[in-house]
Length: 250
Image 1: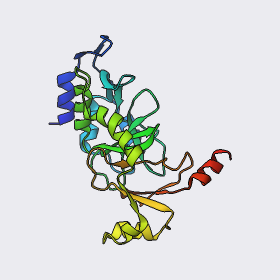
Image 2: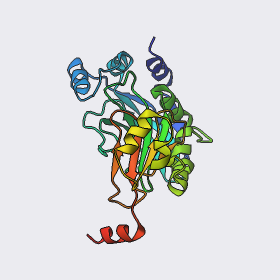
Image 3: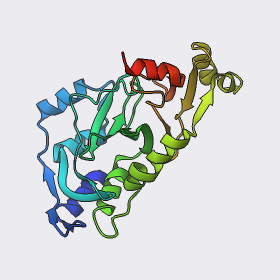
Image 4: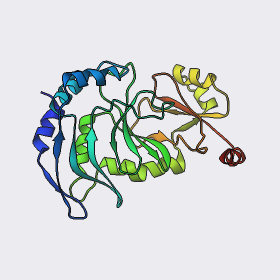
């Protein structure tokens, strides 16, 4: 039994009423053909998990939700098979866009050659320019979308989109200095830190909890980001305010 397929069977046809009292009916998007599934798998750095293969044979996504993200935004559909890729390759070399908020921000599945499941899912925002961990479960993400589509329109998705993204921008709480990484006793942290110099700060998201993340654009639109191979350890190069000011005019 595929839990995502079973859940979608339960909710298809459900009518949601958003905060403007507009009704929306949840409808499944058509399943993929075997040829389309093969093309999608070819775009991945890993084998397509069997659970995802079963899901795509049932539906390629759904639309008609009204998952509220504050006063201005909502997620209205989710698509499971992004063949083109997300972008922001220095952070997500093989990211797959799952959903958008209508304002250029996305939820992205971060896949690597080591992935065994279609996860984890991160929220990637450009204003403010932050990356926030959402969940390690596609089913949980779908359930939270549905929960946020009914009054009082609360969900962990809205929490990440609003307060947790803002917290990351203001505090950048997961950032670590190079010296701290080198002294941590963690071989991967240490190796990554020693490959860079003191102008870099580091973020370890190998074992994140909801709301963990970092500001990938903390030092201006030309902030340089790096990733430690397949591992979810990231680095971003610090810049002085003067350097950022000069770069803005180049």
